[in-house]
Length: 205
Image (cartoon, rainbow, N blue to C red; front, side):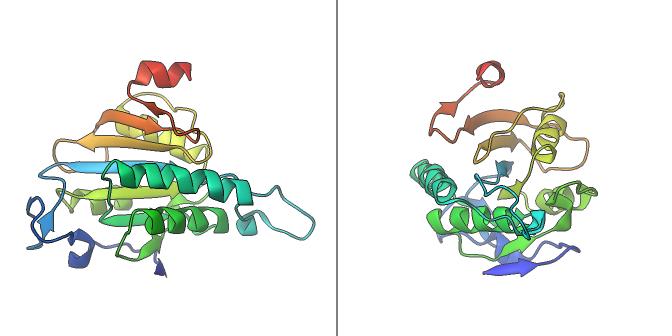
């Protein structure tokens, strides 16, 4: 279920959803999200602190982190959220978070790793273009702070935003996604399970 790749390219199977939902997309599959694109930004769940002999790349989720994020991901499923593509940082704690997300939401594709989502990662343009070539799609990016908060700011046309561990933010685009194109904040699902529906409330949280 896990696949590592840097030269990420859209594939038809990423756009497949259950038969009978949505409208036909450019790949000839039906899409659950109409003509717009939904981006879900996810910060990895709580992980162990660096221990003797354990590199940052190998830090894994705590039992509490797993439990908390499993509830968050289950809440997403309860909201009817499903994904056409899940892309994650290759670090262990992010991959584990992405796999929980995939399992709870019944994701049927591969979890794809991209170094651009790792700490200090750059060159996110190709990830956004991938999402942009999947009109009507629902795409999750799983990564770290401060990059998740910076990416949220870039996609919303504002400054960087704080991003809690295990937090999910939904940003919607009426058309395709592309570098420089701003979307609309829909909501943020906090680790506590609270859903925040406005940026004003999120800033105050």
